[in-house]
Length: 329
Image 1: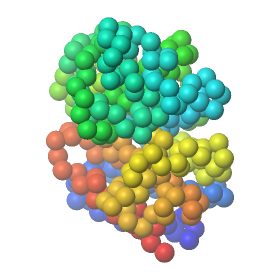
Image 2 (image 1 turned 90 degrees about the horizontal axis):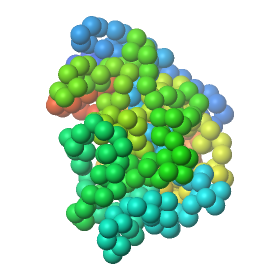
Image 3 (image 1 turned 180 degrees about the vertical axis):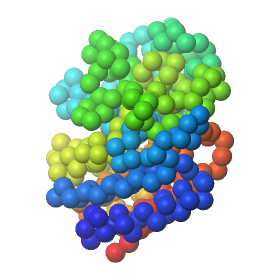
Image 4 (image 1 turned 90 degrees about the vertical axis):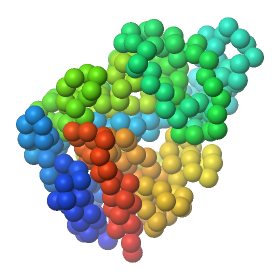
């Protein structure tokens, strides 16, 4: 089925969510390996303190899509070049990581384990509550006595990978090129609004929503901005370059590859994806899925946290419904 027909069919759940007032607006895009694509928008990019319509060219805070659009490719490229060894500990680049006790478990954590979220770091940690000095917060991260727990999805993994990138390149992440069509901020007049932030005391538009990324002034787990077109460009490049991206398709666990998720019962891409599909979501209401077997990718970008995250937007069910319609034969 052509991209335009797939989009038409899969747009219905997004339209219903917007009409029901569960999310302000969104953009859905589909692309195939031949470069055929279709994009459609609906709803509002911002509700308060003013209303602005959503467009196909609206910029979104991509949130955790930063992990797979920026950090993962850079780490894998460094590994391919021999600059780092994925099975070496992070201390091969960050020798000061927990260096006051050389027997700490943190010093044995590897790059590959961080990519696959196979570490004992906590799922959530409010780093931003420890201050706004980015250099001090980086030092805190490296010296904090982390309590080991079960392996869960943790931003700490990618914050540490981001610190390794900064150490290798000798510059902050915000001074690095984020990639074609991507940026570390966006023009507020062209960006989807996110949250009316309690501690920053303003509606966030064009600046990063993630609290820890904001406090660090750039990090490896969040911070990218882009449009549906730029996300689809990234996906199309992956569909046509399976060799150099083999590791993003290589399983590390039942749910994860290097950086990405893979299909499992209840996952965000729906029930009908091929086994060779990878995907990732972002807290702000974003997502990207790439099905290598079908030569197809789709992105669903919403501002579901606007004006607050403390509301049941139904984003989990929406993502799965869109994925199911994309992949129904």
